[in-house]
Length: 422
Image 1 (spheres, rainbow, N blue to C red):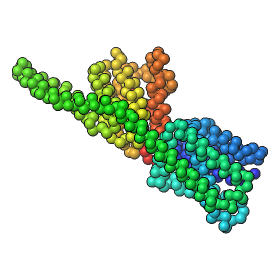
Image 2 (tube, one colour; image 1 turned 180 degrees about the horizontal axis):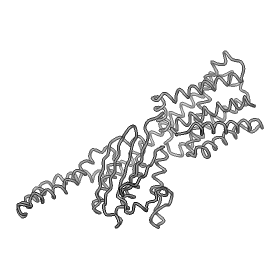
Image 3 (tube, rainbow, N blue to C red; image 1 turned 90 degrees about the horizontal axis):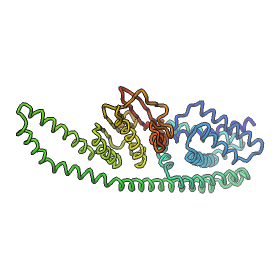
Image 4 (tube, rainbow, N blue to C red; image 1 turned 45 degrees about the vertical axis):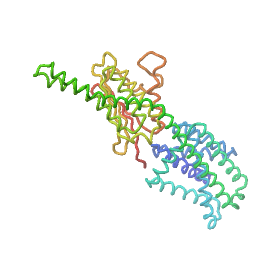
């Protein structure tokens, strides 16, 4: 019983620890050890009373995802089932070598699990390999739900069939190790490449669809820039008019004020050309036009390629629009005297930041603890209160963080993603 518990503990540790690495989750050693102790004890007891191993695995997965780690159910099942498949394949490969030198089943299994444990720990410390595989794993996970369900089902069948054969007669596997490794490994690689390809195609289609939706906005930006170039003659004539009608002592100030007002808006429009992401560019322009009508001072500083590899086009649109709408609703309140909104997107110390600042009408009345609760709103209408909740859901799904601060009567949303792994 004790030996069985030790074997199960090593097996659970290998799967859960590798899952934590690939998910890039910040898990304490205490939580990891607690998971291993609980699951290995549970599985050992269920095996001792003759309960089917399938039931043990299902219960174990539910405990890991829902109770201990509180993570997305479907994606986590996919990850765990995939890692079980990989774990089985590694056991088979190592078994070929160990089987030539060791005849005792318990010692053989202990050595296999120990080798896998050491390999996982080494993998977690090699940052370049860790980062590459984690990014690939993350990309594969971001596929549509129906596709994800299909691959969960497929990998589950592989694991269950293998386990059933092993429990029924492990001699069948032992006597055909090379053939089973080739078939099982081929199936896993084929599924992964197929899944990765589908994920890539879906992502490209999404980008194309949203790009087409925002094309009209881009055309408006181009037209406005051309129009302002055409209006240069009008500006020149206006300045001549100022010189002719304004007193000589006031001419300089009048011209400076005129040029200043025109230059500020012109520069903001011209700087849009240097934003590569079509969604960000379109949202900035749309809000710039909207804020101008309400005399809201709008500033933006956008670095390229900051959010592109983290959020999809739809997600960028959802996050930016919700945060800017939230800022707009705050600054148009009568109590808000200084109507300022600022957005920054930049990289700093291997961390991607999206920061939105706006003047708060009543900074002392802002409840930071309830802002992201589903349905929470300062307005008593049934359609509001879901924007910031949706933002938090998107950011959490990409393992990002949201920091909110009220400083000098400004409310500051800082959304950031740590790009360094390990």
